[in-house]
Image (cartoon, rainbow, N blue to C red; front, side, top):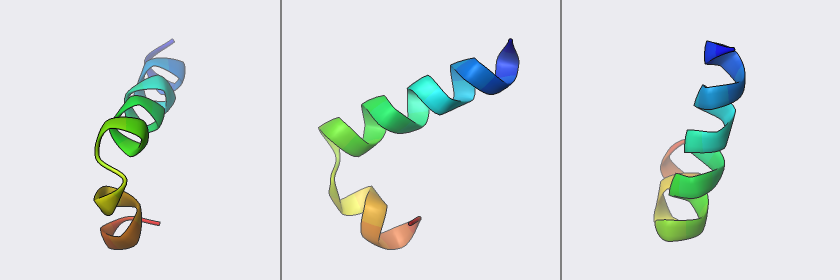
Length: 25
């Protein structure tokens, strides 16, 4: 469950802060 939540958080962050993708691809 936590793994899926972490994925959702990463997706949300990547959408809100696209710059994070460059730092953490």
